[in-house]
Image (cartoon, rainbow, N blue to C red; front, side):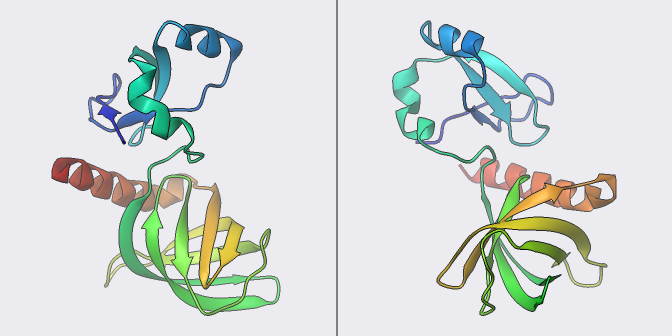
Length: 164
């Protein structure tokens, strides 16, 4: 169950239950007040919600909701060079389908081809998982020059929320 709240900062309906990060948050959760984080602006806040509604989410390790996409990527690293297809993305990283064998922990420099006719977004990432031709990549830093990537993710997240 993926229950989303409206963010108190940006007003979008894309805030979801977040992981408890302090003793204070743990204590407040005894009184049905839990941490939430906006999937658009990243704002973190507390809200009163009965925890039984969020049991399934508690086990979710990911901080950011994954958004299904389909676009090309080219990547390179130490003794690695390849191409693939990004099949989902979030503010924290992405999943890539590829035929190239890549080791967990490898650092990659990636070019994300978000749309035809525009230059790719360039971002660095660390391979967190590699299995059956799928790479889980965590973005190491998404600097201001990657605002196009953040804007792309925001547009897709808003579009996805309207479908729900």
